[in-house]
Length: 195
Image 1 (cartoon, rainbow, N blue to C red):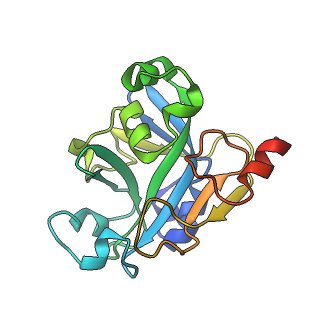
Image 2: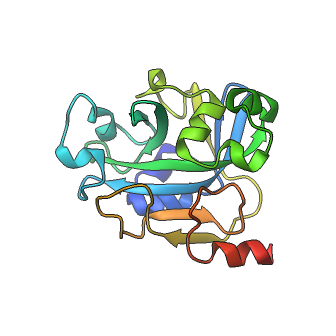
């Protein structure tokens, strides 16, 4: 995974990030769910142009865009496409692979599949806060890593938890993963039965 891998269309990058890793400190997870956001559509923060809040979205690919949702949940995004274009991939869910006990401590949970099954949950589990906005995901402290293991079957569906442009097919997840946030996209239940 290099910066060049993040310069393509945001929807392609969102799909390609499935299976990659996110590491922060002693905790690591495999990306199992993403959503794509582009300045051309109203659900993207960059739709309003450059503001104090959105300027990071126009930075170079591989920059972390972190914002508070509902004033309490830090959400981690990977800035992509070329510098000057407002586009990012929301990391929606991870499968924990390292530092699971620390994740449990931070989240107050025991079930692995619930630790990072949502964008606010994964940031809490990884210890990622707003102070890491605009940091470089290749230099750290949050690090984006290459895919591990065999390529997964990827399902595509519509984004969730939004009211603007909810019908765009911009949500991607690993078929058969119990770590994906709910509601699961079409086909996920069948993939779970087959797994």
